[in-house]
Image (cartoon, rainbow, N blue to C red; front, side):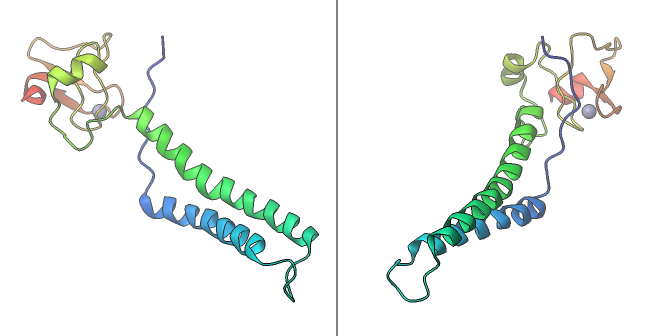
Length: 137
Ligand SMILES: [Zn+2]
């Protein structure tokens, strides 16, 4: 059983792009270091290549690893349906025990969630009230 966790907000694209620029810088550095002919005048010596590659790989690990892991965390926290705020019950049933989703944050309605006879429910995650009948469309 996995414990319910609050949805992870999608990291802003400009932050991801900014971080991934470090990765591209590292990639460019790596290509630059190893694309030069060792016989050419002014080519970096092997030790400089090794050292530069190490830094480049560290940049790439940070520049690509952080945005990817952030996106993975986000996509796992939010199990789809963000493009469609109106949840489809037939599809929702396969993912959620109840098939209902909060229209505000997309969190699934837990089995332990208390629903009033009129269908009003308070979201566990964003603490907003919504109605399962309205949400079903
Ligand atoms: Zn919610």
